[in-house]
Amino acid sequence: MKRITKLWPGGKPKAFTLSYDDGVEQDRRLIGIFNKYNLKATFNLNSGIQHEGSFWVDKGRTIRRMNPEGLEALYEGHEIAVHSLTHPILPDLPRELMLTEILEDKRNLEQKFGYLVTGMAYPFGAYNAAVIEVLKASGLEYARTVNSHLKFNLPENPYEWHPTCHHNHPELMNLAEAFLAERFGSLSLFYVWGHSYEFDVQDNWERIEEFSQKISNHPEVWYATNIEIIRYMEACSRLKFSVDCTLAYNPSALAVWVSADGNAVEVPPGKTVQLY
Figure 1 (cartoon, rainbow, N blue to C red):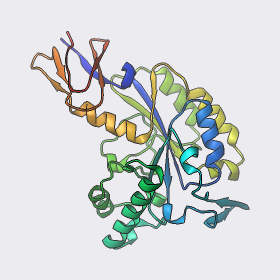
Figure 2 (tube, rainbow, N blue to C red):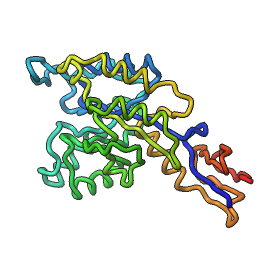
Figure 3 (spheres, rainbow, N blue to C red):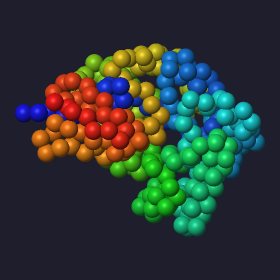
């Protein structure tokens, strides 16, 4: 019997992504580490308070957001996403203020970085059905929660995208080893999130350096931003197959890869490909 499964770009069976919030000064050091190991991340910014005058103190350390000048170059190669205009607890707001918080942040970030901004992380991890409704109405394609599930699953609902774990989870390194070693029967995804200032507060920058080195540059892993994951999943969902599954047609604008009885096959955009 024919067996067809979906693969990540390049015919890879695994994907890895990262997400960091708040646009703080420590992002500079973190991005240096990610770039060193060829990792790609999504950074969630609050454009209404993106300046050095926005700060707080955590365990005696001053945590300060960056001024907006030069952020385009700093975040180049990574994704910028919405984190709301001023970082409120969104479910506490009237719908009108929710819309302002989301749309104005999206507008400002798009004007600043020069591309469509369609992803998000919930401030304080707080959301409900009303917030999700506003996100959809605002043209956002996904939103990340803070609810770790310690699995390598794809999101069932892109507006309730639960990451695998926080970078300080005690099982982080064990999860990395399992992810790299295991063979999965379907697409797998390892998703790590956090705040870069936590490495200063907890004085453990060596943790993210060690983890980045361990997880990086593996031939079976696709390294992607959050939005790249979401858009590839959407392209995969649009594949059309003949009744006998010998042909695959790709109506999307992205190349999609499938495994046909263990053989990786690329289905280019707008093309029909013989799988068997």
